[in-house]
Amino acid sequence: MEFGTGKGKGVKIFSYIVLALFALCCIIPLLNIIMISFTDSSSIDTYGYSLFPKVLTLEAYELLFENPTTIVDAYGVTLFVTIVGTFLAVLIGVQFAYGLSRKNYVLRNQSSFYLYFTMLFSGGTVPIYILVTQYLGLKNSLWALILPYIVTPYNIFLIRTFIQGLPDTVFEAAKIDGAGEYTILYKMVYPMCKGGIATVTLFYLLSFWNAWYPCLLYINKSKLYTLQYMLHVLMGKIETLNMEVANGMAVNYFQQLPEDSLRMATCLVAIGPLIVAFPFFQKYFVRGIAVGAVKG
Image (cartoon, rainbow, N blue to C red; front, side):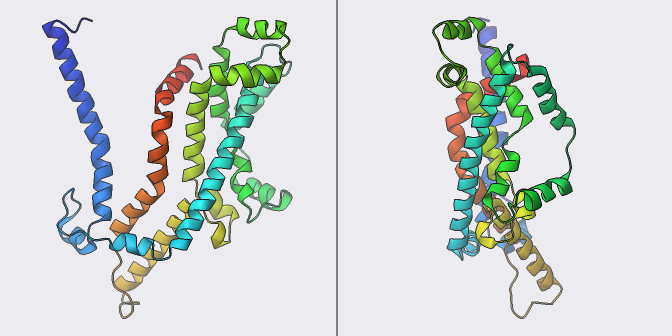
């Protein structure tokens, strides 16, 4: 379509307006979360949520960072789990996907079925808990937050789709030149499939960073709490304390805590690093999903 015509300009302007409205729908909730985190609790009770609060306060952040060592330790644990887990998941996933994409792999169909079967059925929480804690002995270990989650069938199939999109002549030429499977994988597949690998890497980053339920299952030591679970525990304590205050059980000792603003402050603390990391993967993300959807 030529945008030089009047009709083309109209379509272009309309497209910009729609995209601008969509961008506002994404930005306004984030701005609302930021402003609520700085809003006084009494102001929220009186006037409700607003992008322009009447009373600003740092009370929620002061309460959240009252013991900064706890936050720092939780950040350290989460960074370790996220970085190590993502690295191992991508490393193993790409190798698994490469094997599934090779037509000369004898157990290709059987391996694909085995992987696909796990997407439909699982052993359940109790068997997995028994396996991790009793047979593997990973109770109160950070590896309990990593090892059971480094193989994700959907991500492996997505990477396989990218590898299958590569021309067979590339692999044949490499074989003629004497390249082995690992040489082809690390020197050819990785560079040529960096869009798909970056997309899957982002998926794993989000999964490991946001996970709190595995910590609930396998971790009892507070020093090993991940950031998400630590914030979950903190919010549970705040809600319980506010209920006691409302029932008159703690009115003589505590004031009403800023539950709403504190909840939003915890959201910002939790998503901060992801907002920084996402732009580095953005250019690969849409293309990776589109290729996986079309060819999968």
